[in-house]
Amino acid sequence: MKWYSLFLIGFLGTALSESIIISDSEQLQSALRSAGPGTTILLKPGQYRGGLYINNLAGTEEKPILITGTDPEDKPVFSGGGQALHLADCRYVTLRNLVVKGFPSNGINIDDGGSFDTPAHHIVIENVMIQETGPEGNHDALKMSGVNHFIIRRCRFIGWGGSGIDMVGCHYGVVEDCAFEGREGFSQSNAVQLKGGTTNMLVQTSLFLDCGHRGINLGGSTGLEYFRPRVDDYEAKDIEIAGNHFAGSMTPVAWVTADGGWIHHNTIKQPGKWVLRILQETKDTRFKPCHDGLFENNLIIFDSRVKTFVNIGPGTAPETFHFHHNAWFDMEDDRKPALPTPETDGIYHLLTDTPEGDMQTAQRMYSTLSKIGSHGYSRKILHKQYP
Image (cartoon, rainbow, N blue to C red; front, side, top):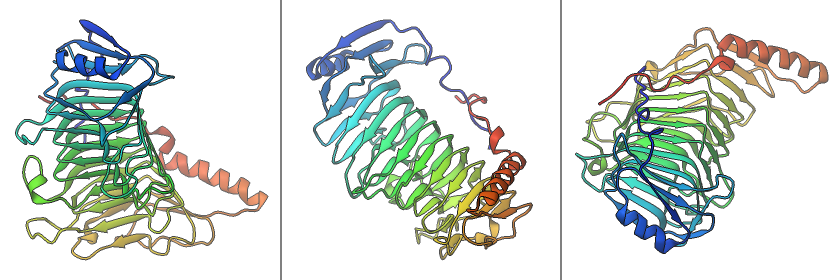
């Protein structure tokens, strides 16, 4: 999957034509009503009310709209209301340097306004913190439905009910350099969910720390009426998960009614129950069995909590999955992982706690990392242009 395109070039660095300095919620609402191509809305540090519904906010490729805190070290904080911001059918809009805290519904909601044939597009979320969403049930820190050509960069998600980022029918997007941190008292179904016909996505170089049931849900179970742009035979397709660090969670990655999915150059440390899951969470016969995932060049450190390495659900096609050149370190025993198909060029080691063992382990891990190339993973994003 070599599709990535720097669709953001040409509008991230464009000179903007108007700047409005904001210091309270009333001024912000007024500025949003009048904002047009090239507007920069500068929010001073302080408290701002949530519950903002922003419809059809439209920049252009040459003149995007920027909503940003003035001080990255002292960001404006949104609180109060069901959700902080709801952007409906917007395009060429950037949100930057914001904090969203304590919303019971969703933190930020971005969608196509229910018009599936006109998705929201060219949205950037950068250096935004969303924390304490929910705390339980289907309440997402960042909810996205029908959004194309977007990037979520250097954001932090702390404590949520459903998903850290929930994508339904989203296409051509990148999540990079983000941190997802589970918090006690929050249900945290997954950190990133890609479902409802989501395609052509890259999740890279991010941290997933104790993110609940599933770190990344590659697919899912979506009501047919919510698929964008239409129902096909998969929940997710052409997804790449690369260069991330997973620690904890019941499982770091689950393929769910997915068509393929390339998982590579990740570090997985001490999953709570499984290393991977292969599931089919819909009984509708139009969907193909979950199939053809590729898991390669990953480093996995596990202990006795992992009894089953790959949890395989009914109605899937585990025989179509491929495992190549992964490095497996057992912290307590000397087990070789049981996988649904034979692995090629796998590397298997036992970890030990003795001082001599620590040195030997460090040497083996360094050698292993060099062999699988995790030190050399570099971004592959955004070279091919898309209309």
